Length: 382
Image (cartoon, rainbow, N blue to C red; front, side, top):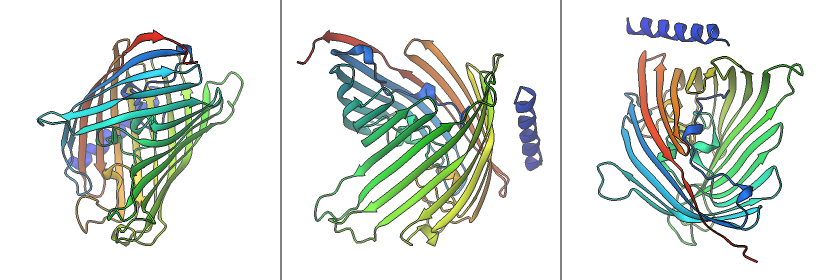
């Protein structure tokens, strides 16, 4: 009976999307952003920027791939930003995060970031990156929850924004080693690139986008005494998105489809799984305050290196748990509201229906982001 009801809900959601006029390839997460974007008009100014994020996420998961747990707490990142002209910014501060119920901070990390505008379309960031949720990757490649579990990424990042090409390419250096260390070097390389095709006609509101996304992880290091073999693995996703920009109550709506692959390059993959593939397609619709997404995921021997556990074929939380084929129906409903300038509220419901197991897992959460900036002084450094 439960399986039959879920199928009816799925059919209703699909019909609803089409009758409300058939965008991102995932839910719109922009209301969760808090990285201070580069402002060229701030030349020679010293600014105090405060990024405050308050969050609650309750995961009601009963599967073998992802823990059911609740994350509730806050993050605070005060930083001083100095604009040396209109092409360079130095940002220095500290990030602290505390989960409710703890008497100590779960994260205390210095934040130092050099942001250089090489040109009007190319930015380079070294140090603390524009990371996690800002990368805007699909969930089978990159878990949204990393905004809380790895809130500060450090390394190197290139941002490219041209009329038809947008790209985010970065290296997150997760663990540094010295000669003789008995633990491995860890780093993640990521890319999210989109190429916008020409409109079908000059007056068309349709847009066709070709996305290419990748995650590569490396564990090893030539100077480490870590006994395990070097491991390098790759997730690659490519597909097509069609977007229609509307003038009615829906801001935009569209469809997306991705082919996804997994490959381990060293023949030491988890549970002996070295190659896998998946597909992920669905429908999206966005109004000024409400976001909807529904999708279908099929994976065979798929390992999501930095992705959400719900999409895995191999469990990383339980030993010897392996499901070669995964089939999921996903549903996301988001509500976003800007309370005041620099104060944003968001709510997100996520549903994952496992078709073979006839099981529904879900998560619900909310977030308040407060990102004020205060002018301190203006002074040229030369």
